[in-house]
Length: 543
Ligand code: SF4
Image (cartoon, rainbow, N blue to C red; front, side):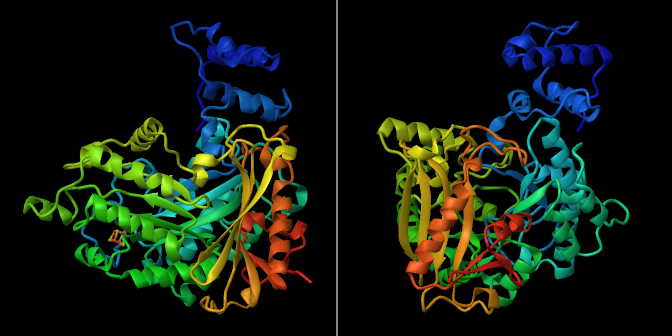
């Protein structure tokens, strides 16, 4: 997305940018140069001019300047930029009564749902979706060198595998395309073999190019059903480069699952979670209060079950919403289902949120569906804020990962405290090793998993007898590779120190090998830290 600025606006933007470079406050500089017809320039116009000037060699790249003129810095504060893409409309094997159907969309998505709209706009073309999102982020000054790719749409595993492979490859093609003005080193440019619009020959090639490209993939997420997870599927997911799996648990009560025609039982979710853990994946579970047959009280009990054996790394709380194009609508018409009121929902989430363990991140407490689609029940999409206001009033607080992330605040390495939270998760012993600030904010963490004797066999040679690093996450503004920012957690060596700690714990527990589920674009990081390329993981000998 490029701003088409008139010559007048360009001159004005240059003037404003010049003042900001000389230290003037951004808002004051913008306000002191109003546009002729009224109004002011905005930050994205400044970023557009900045990019033009850098590309023309008029000014050098200036990460600090860019940081000041960039819009919405929150989006990249967790260190990586998320790019969401949607797969094409396709049937899902599930028959869940709460799930909406729209022939224009993959199962469960609505055409006017933010985040899903771009898929429809681009006819679900993976390359176009990724490329347009990267361009859009760049035009407002976000770094796009570290990308977590989130693939949404029904049940990933139910798509044909040739489609899955093509889809992922095209996403990588888009990340490998040089959209930024900064040139690649010559050797990398020569390695880029393209046909047509940035197309590489196969997935392996697209992967290997991504190890040294402009937009490195630091995470690849898909969503699927628990009954699709088996040892063949996890091997396939690793072949694609997947690092994180989102699964609908929805409820941990067999009776509720059956009433809602979920098509699998709780035991199935447990098996899938254990297998994903044994294979080092990060696990995100979706949990739905207010399903048919549930009450606020039964939901409180159900939520508590999540922290025994399942122990997801992240959760999305998706309160069931009554939609006209879901089967549940007929139950409601017959008077067999009643959605909770907004207040009942707030009370429920306010009660359960403080019980969430420190190792888990709550990504959502409501699905972002435009309220016009909701037939009855809560229509507020700002529920997270309402919940936090009510928790403040009650004097309770949540210690989940998201609530403790250090975000853009400076951290001073010497003041950080090292915490090792140990918890059982099925047969595995999990260590959530973190660096915490004096006011209990999270500067970074590692998830170390020590498989037990009863952990499920994965059939993958890389993982034989290995302790697993499932995630390394260090917070701070996502800076372009090589740019420094004083006090930013990402650049003070915290990742290395956390890895060293994980290795020493693994050794102390008798493990002689370590394996990490590295995203494609982070392989270089692990190679520099003594890991070697395995078949599907990066591995290290601990002897
Ligand atoms: S499995 Fe997911 S996408 Fe499929 S019907 Fe159920 S809720 Fe919808």
